[in-house]
Length: 331
Image (cartoon, rainbow, N blue to C red; front, top):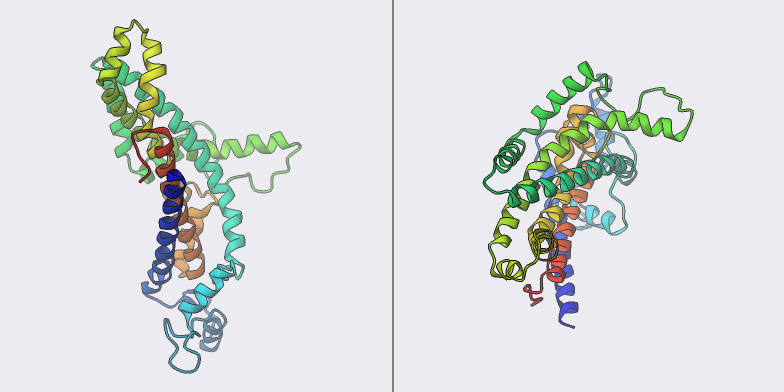
């Protein structure tokens, strides 16, 4: 019963947070300078055509309260009304439903993020574990230096370097997700082609995320190895492998699990730079284009997706922590 109440409270506050995000999401992009109707770069576009565009997308309506006629006939209330119906609006730039555009781009971003995240988690935890177990050795110093170096690397700088190396020395594609105009003889041919396009952006994401998992795992395991129950386990005659497997790793993983949950949410937003460098057709490149075009519905939909992913990741981390660590009492 106590855990059920804890779960309900966490879900409730997650919903409240999302509601606040929805409101901020509406105002955030409307403080940007410029008129979306005038951002369309077409010299043939007349003032009458621009006004027609503003009317079509509801930009002619008051922002909050309509003092003339129906007070709810404003951009704010229309925005919430559309969201309640599952409608994220129509993209100014593509004249298509935002939900359809996000669905198309999301699969590409998830593919890139998922592979890069898994590689970073596995490699980072493994090297962090080895570094902590061999504390004070040359291997430990090397792992810490690599972790700090990769953590401090600017994403766009690393992406550009790997783009040059991959295209000049390895013969890899410089952008996109598939070779334009390619006809695949089989499904595996397509997989190989997509894999070649993914190699450099995935490597960039893996290197950027690797350092934090290495350092957090090392720090957490070192703290656990200094606990009294580890000394007791060794006094019982348990081998190093048994101490690590049965006592140390499970407890050391708790901070890492929290980091994984949080990183999953933020990595989707952080892929914007990588997708821009490698021309990856995901959410990141769509957002960069939407900013230039003042495409409010597209920006609102994308940032709403990012915010919800972060809130849900936080909630999952809280729930997992309560389940894995008996010291965390669901109050």
